[in-house]
Length: 413
Ligand SMILES: *[C@@H]1O[C@H](CO)[C@@H](O)[C@H](O)[C@H]1NC(C)=O
Ligand SMILES: *[C@@H]1O[C@H](CO)[C@@H](O)[C@H](O)[C@H]1NC(C)=O
Image (cartoon, rainbow, N blue to C red; front, side, top):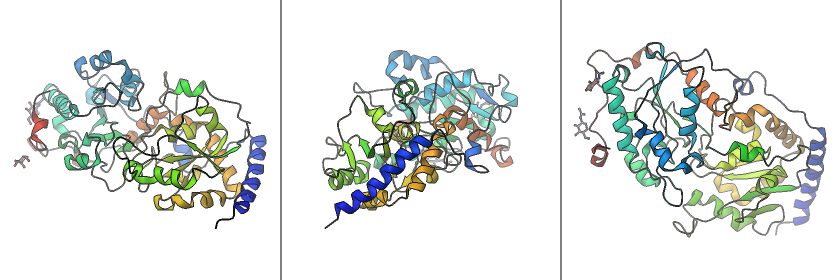
């Protein structure tokens, strides 16, 4: 039998440390000489982006039909377009561009309940690539190797929301040479190719700002989580949804007083995260869940439960230092794992999280701010320059197979 008094003793020590930490703020901490500095890089002057002009049916018309596209977690594809149009890195001269960007809103096709349907995305993407490759010479020069695409859907450019189907489809073959900017991030997965840039999902910045509470509010909640534990419709057993991690959290800790977990979504949700020490982020296959963004913005130490995940901007954000990684199979020991973290370590993580540059990197604000997620994407693209000579094909050389992939994808859009 577990000794609860033992657990509480630890919790008390920690509670003391957290309130102490709160009083000692606003000390923030930078990780100098490493990732922390990269976050503050300024991409302007380090790359030039040419924005293709496409007929509005590929972008603005879709948004006109459904304004909800601006609020869902994949809205980065729209905001990135808007950002680039007025960005200092944009060049009107494609001859001097380092990168080419095709503004296409492949996830702006929502069901009545707001879920993106990716079934037309491959045809739409193919149609756009056909257009740019016949109207401009730049695609054929590299067959896309100096082009980037924002594909924030569940499994990125595999364009399916069911994993098996996504794997079966693989990345749309026309995008095999391009750089993909996506929320999907899982190591050794066919839908994440080498060189992709993993980004956070879109979470509404103004709404989060509006719920900020004073920074010195004590963190009196030990572990916090709100969300589903089971996907009742698709996976009542709980084995598939978030790979069972959420179900395991519920079954092991629903009655544990250190765990403030529930499916209820209270109106004080954002405030509660600012009163919590640890925020659970059972992320399944990818950092799609806005919980990761919320935890960072609200200074709650993210407890990342997702084996082999690739987190957003992992080359710039020191995730191991600000968060806690818990292996999926260790979920039943979450209480012991979290109560054994020393107050010093907790305080250091909290100081790192208090660094405004971490928060900024997670958000897509309107208007953009230096260091925000838009800038981190550009930094990621700039770090890939200069392009290797091998990306430029010899005259007449062809690498891509335009007829590869499912036959249905070849139908005109
Ligand atoms: C690019 O190559 C395709 C054939 O692969 C061709 O149809 C198209 O006209 C070429 N584009 C340009 C601008 O020459
Ligand atoms: C292109 O893909 C199609 C369909 O998979 C295949 O039949 C064809 O042989 C491929 N062409 C080349 C040149 O590899």
